[in-house]
Image: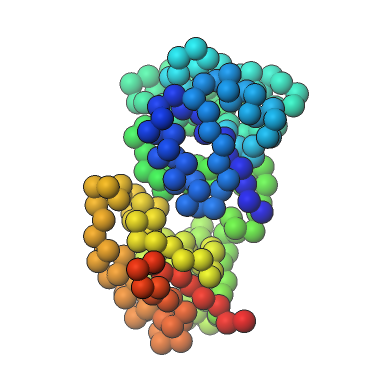
Length: 232
């Protein structure tokens, strides 16, 4: 199931940044620069979640959240608000009182944002892609306890190795680019840090720890990235 997210932010650059992250994770994205645009879009397209900045000219994110929750047609849509830390406590309280389902403080890493979105979606639904137990080719990952096993054998993974393997296993067969992995697993902005050796070294370590059979399931796709393949 492909989830639709409505991004609301008057900052064009930040809107595009968020679109890139979310579409890279497989979500469908609508975007608006004002609260009024968001209200119209939410009523028409019924997104699965609204991600809105708080500080916007005209209708603020707090007001947008209240209006969405007050309307019968959009009341069931979860809302995550984004805000700078300067007025964090005051705005978070107002947002929660206004019906916000979660809050994220700027600046935030893509990994934190995705964790927030998945947590909110889990409360409203339980799609296959958000499963907490991932299994493939005799490999089992328990996302909650961060435990990895291969046919009963425990595999000691570092935090980044576990996150990288989880990303690959959630969508087997999909090719993940190095910039995408640096952004989502490590939280780097690829425009500031783009060394492919970081991903390469972790993939190499993963292959070594998983053993020859599973190592072959993590494929390097030249000039494109990496993927986890399953036997038919």
